[in-house]
Image (cartoon, rainbow, N blue to C red; front, side, top):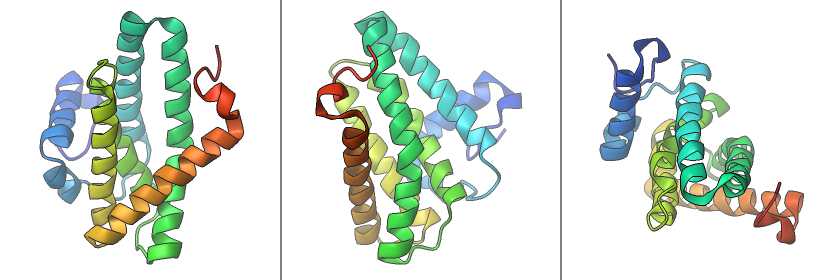
Length: 176
């Protein structure tokens, strides 16, 4: 059983092992994570994290809030990896590709398992940015400063795209 790649056929124990490694030893996880190997396993991992987040968000905040926040998270995961890759390659001459970028972002989604907790949610999102930063160092072979700047550029650009797509008044309640 590997703790550097989620293999769905290995079941819930494999998920827990990878989640624990991402959250507690992110440098080790990203060091061992293959930058290639397809989209399926990381996206299934992200889907499980998103499902857990959604269910717990419904319990704590209600269905309308859960639908709205999972929609915003989905938009961030649609735009974010591409923006990260483009910022890395065109601004900082990063060496990675979209596959590796999506993989590192999907595993950073492990933070969704804690983001539903009212007082801890914002810290979980900040920690996910830290995970993305660590993954960018490895996947795109960027130094610390370039990885941090790439992560911040992608955060700002992704946020601006979401605001542009939804409009300022719809950010709080994009669907309901």
